[in-house]
Length: 378
Image 1 (cartoon, rainbow, N blue to C red):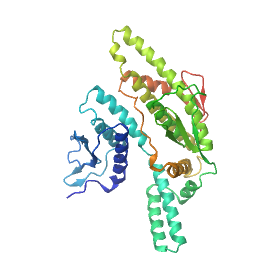
Image 2 (image 1 turned 90 degrees about the vertical axis):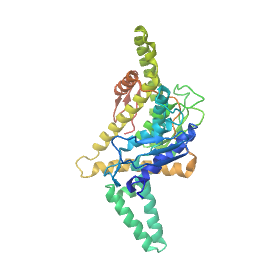
Image 3 (image 1 turned 30 degrees about the horizontal axis):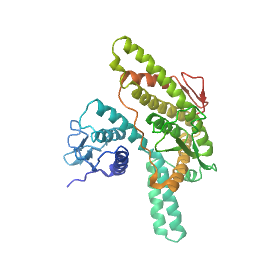
Image 4 (image 1 turned 180 degrees about the vertical axis):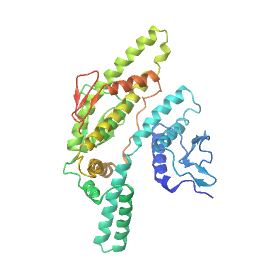
């Protein structure tokens, strides 16, 4: 009997399955189990399925005549399929309510997704510690086994031994927790979580080498990172939230006047949810572009300097992740809150345009509808 998973897909499948279980609990969905499904008709058959009693199957890559395809499915497509099938646990159809809930779950799943480079570095740091520990007690055979495994990973991910050393001692800046002061920055307090704010927090945290914590039953956000990074992240988020809310309100009322005057009031449905989704997605892209520009500017004439600079930036995230793992263990949660929904074409276009109107760079971020400036931390 052929295996259900290609060896290269095992880690990704278990990561996605774990995220599905966490999101299903958060949204009170009756998920029974998640299983891989080798798909012999990759081009035409469904890439996932869901039974009414909560059994979900996902296709990680195709299989023809008992042989795996050389290439797996695109990773983000598998995450989106997982969200699609989870949405069927509440709406066993493809109607408007299903589509809105699917959009929300795609965001929730993405908020669970861990950056691959962070995991590789974290794993290498732990393996290096194990190697040194075995050598210290005279177990040279085990130490050499760890060394061989580390070398294989260094080659596979195009890293250097110095990258591990830097990740272990990225800087002497202590990891701190900074909770956003909603009153100080004019952010309305809510007794419920707000999806677009949590997604924005995730974007800002990643751009500033931090993580973030969610406060259940409220829209409070806490950034976790080295003091220099977390301080900037908290400031950027605190300034960006009210600017974003104002831009969203402005575009909503502008579009509302258009559709109402045309006698098409029904078209307003889903505008805001799609606006926020497109805005946060585009802001994430803009931050990534700014980060890449900063890395490219790091000693451009020195061979390998850019890849080393990127690894050293990511090394700060390893330090933060260790802090969170040690303090919170498995109790932490990253699922997004209910709120963002819909795939409104005009809403998405307006949200993306608003994000493009903001100037993001090494010196700061300027809101298209506001004079405020935000430090990018790069």
